[in-house]
Length: 139
Image 1 (cartoon, helix red, strand yellow):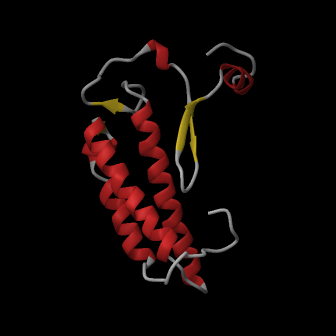
Image 2 (spheres, one colour; image 1 turned 135 degrees about the horizontal axis):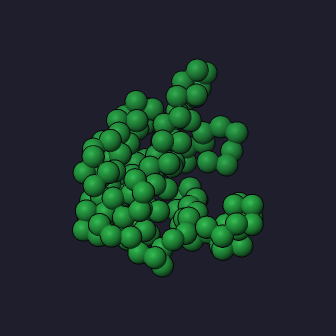
């Protein structure tokens, strides 16, 4: 969240356990995270966006519970990044299996970078960065 602690924008009314349950409901089912389809990914991402809004507005804690609240917030952020990037990759590649697009697309032979908290983004990694990461070898 970019701050040293959780700072809800409203009254603290969300607990870390309910956030974890909401995230697990979207990321654990195989039909969403293994055999992916755009409609299911979009639905899961919408739900995670709603959970993120609830986290930003009302997740807070103190003491040891602060650690659990931060973990819960991180789980929501990761789930949103994961599905946002998955929607950008409209092919099957590696462990990313698109149910309606089983073949690889040579134009998508690149890594995707993703980030953001309140506004999630994804973009292809630049070829220059890929060359540096691979030690100058073509991928």
